[in-house]
Length: 455
Image (cartoon, rainbow, N blue to C red; front, side, top):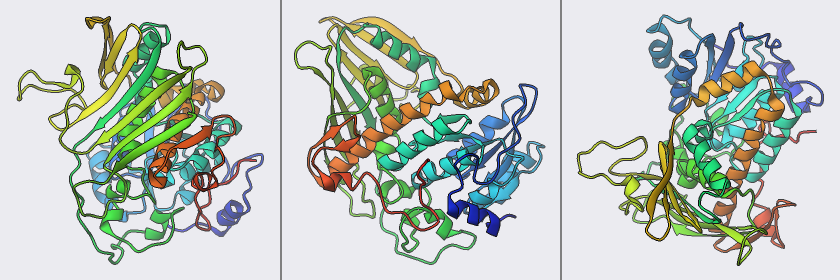
């Protein structure tokens, strides 16, 4: 099992040798559609297993390496996804830097906690690997900027984890809105009403055997181990996660921004709180974020509004799309007795409701059913297809769109944490006359885990 970084690779990393090639040397040039694509999955506890199974299901694709800082996960996952399927056992790594020296790996799936997303992706890009990075593609605004720079400089495929972008359902919705199907679309709403119970309290404790906690912390500040800052519950801690607006909500934020056809806002105002529970969570569980965008072509006030709302408990359904006719009726993906996940759009001709699977427009004052759409696609297959087509210049525009969506998450969270509204310049990508807010666009990094400048 690989656990240590070689002196050679660490020196090359520390020196930042990435001006013309890669930090660890590149994979062999991928030679064509008849060759097998070999994928490594980094982060294997939760969504990582979805990635493993999805790539294994694709023709001429092999998952040949796994990487995780928790060695306790390897045996069960290798048995489940490889041994029982009569597939070759994968190579096992603890340190991603060691994995990136492996020239038998063509592509890397980054499925780590949020605070590792951009750094792991940038290192992989610089190592000459194709990369798919789970949502959100960045833990903060600065990292997103650096990821986009890397995706433009290096000649590899980079995919953002906003999987609804691959679905015909979302694509037809965006086309309908952008072609004027609702007239002037002046407001979008993202809905993230997802039942979340208390996480309680867990004390600081010794690091579990088999966990490389220093690697798990990576770019984040040094602090003691606690179960509530580890598997999954890291989402509710600012050092590692972005709250539910940056967890489930990133999907609905992406659809809202896409349908509204905007990029970066000029004003941000966010309010909310952590209600009902006395526990270890330090991100809000109820949040209302408002974003204002310039819209010079609009009638009246020359602007658009994006409203995003996270609720953690009992809530209404917003539209009958999320309602069941009877309590025991089946529901669709991401719709349940507890969840209302989706979007609403408001235009001069009507409004539109969308969940993950379908969208429906309602036209005029009588709200008569109008156009509709549906359809799923395979986001994992889209990544592999892009590698085969080898057109990063065009495909990598998707991860830039992912950054613009993540930017809204980060700007909204900064407004919430400061407790005030903020003015933002989309051109300079800075807050206007607000050094305190600008100081929150980029964190301090630990030595050896610094998100690099791309030169």
